[in-house]
Image 1 (cartoon, rainbow, N blue to C red):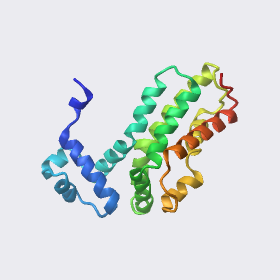
Image 2: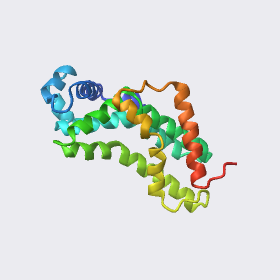
Image 3: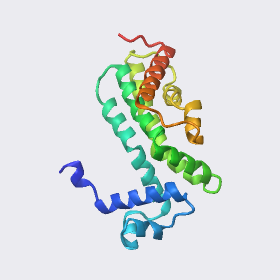
Image 4: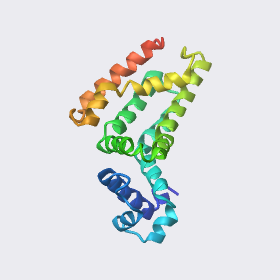
Length: 205
């Protein structure tokens, strides 16, 4: 059975509808009734797939992060050049981080986290935690194989992802920076990856 045959069309419709509503109306402004109407599915079908609005938001976040996580899983399973591996991960991360939906989700969680602190934890567990854990395991393996001189793989994984945020990402969140062009994305990937590898003392072949 192919991956496309495993996709539940009703579940997919629910997640797509919820994504649109969450990102345009915020968490508090969306009810399960509204999501069911937008999908459109019955309330029974909606609750059969998701027992709460929290569970549905988690699914939305996982869906937004799916390309990054799939790229990481596929890329890290291949014995490839370290530089190319990190560039592939960086490219997928930038596509998520700077996409309109990625930026909107970031704003949503920040705006709602004061009254709903569990949302922040849920979003972190659905995306960032998994990505950092995967990269940490990869870096630790490189260290164990004596391919990369890393003393703290957890910090090193976090530092890699952090290089792609900073001032540029902040301006995009504030809406004062235009979306990155493809050339700007390429420049960011190249510079940050080389900077990172030099910083940890990796000498490319």
